Length: 129
Image (cartoon, rainbow, N blue to C red; front, side, top):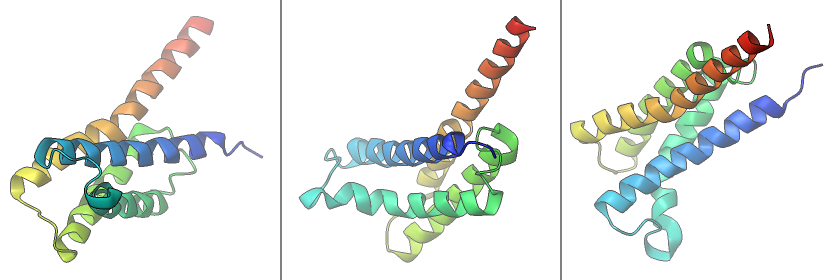
């Protein structure tokens, strides 16, 4: 039986990074990260958090949670597509510039940390060999 820790760690980190993405956007455009009664951040983040969870299901992310290509890319793609779609149907903005910034930022966040982890793991294996 394999440990569930890497998957839980990866999922929590992904959620935190998606919320950070939403917070950065709110800070940049609204100046108030939390918004009225603290609901602004939740309103901004929820479409992407739902997309992220869907991405984990679609990619079977718990099987290889640290894999940049096998897990990171599909999680990123589904998070982006579902997040944009959910923003649109919930009446939030989906300007082309926002979609581009979201695509780049979420790629850096969701694929980037996995790539760094993979490089570090390879370096560790090389040193011990």
